[in-house]
Length: 280
Image (cartoon, rainbow, N blue to C red; front, side, top):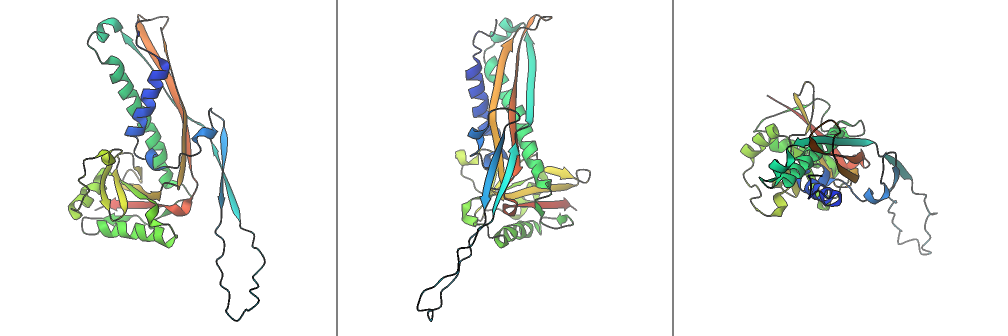
């Protein structure tokens, strides 16, 4: 076939590498379960445990007797793998197009961006999951005068849930929220290192601030449902990317088709807050 430099394994590796670079929401998920699944219909049991009670011994208790061992409650969440996004396109007169150079790289980049966008939208919509607590029952009207207070309130809610703030907290904001945030906060991270990839735009205290156009919107797009969370709050898996090249029977062209398999679930609802806001 005319795709003389098409090697499925190389193409898939390129797409996966680009996905890691482009994804904003997916980067801040728990990915440890990815090796446990490989196909649609697979599922993984995610186990969690409660916290043991820390008790004290009175000095008067000379014998040092302690209570009976308590039974720690546990939780089990099942993550089913069911999300599939696919692509299937052809390019006519491929030999002439390849003469320009860079065709495969361009197609790989466009495919990766499209798949990353679908995954990020899927994760972003978990902000509206029924298990996720909202910052306020009625969306907060945010302005440049109160935008930092809104962030402080969200951080406080996590702290009140006993979330360790040193464990790495991220908030992913929308462009319209970022406009107000930028006006109110000037001490942005200006380090032009690789740390600025995946949508990072600033540090607010010890919270990483990221920007994405995929923030979930509700109420006719008037309300932004932004996530502030730890990396443990959402489990996400993208265990398989498949590609293959072929020659369409009724066309003078070469084609590439493939799919990405993924899924995710809120597994630690106390470690994520829906920062639901609207604008004046």
